[in-house]
Length: 79
Image 1 (tube, rainbow, N blue to C red):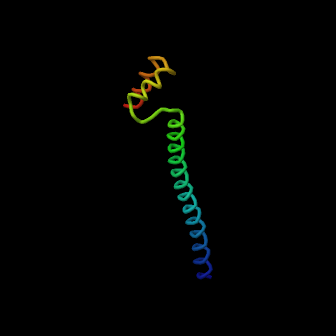
Image 2 (tube, one colour):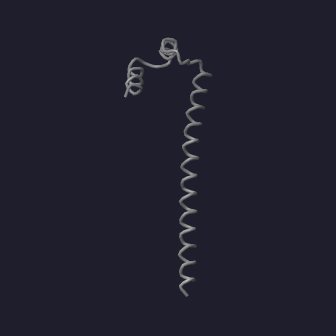
Image 3 (cartoon, rainbow, N blue to C red):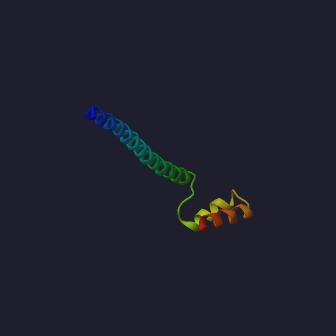
C-alpha cells in the first residue's frame, strides 16, 4: 500500500514539473518573440529612410512631425 502512495505522489510531482517546464519554455519563447519584434521594427524604420545617425534622423522626422511631438519623443527616449 505504501508503495502505491509513493507512486501516486511521484506521478503528481511529475505532472507539476512538466507544467512548470512548459511555462518556462513559453516565457523563453515570448522573450525571443519580443526581440524579433524589435528587430523587425528597426528594419521597418530603415526602409522608411530613417537612419541611426541622429542629425539626418531629425531632419527626416521634422518633415512629418510637429515640434511638440518631437520634444515628446526625445523625452521618452531619455526617460
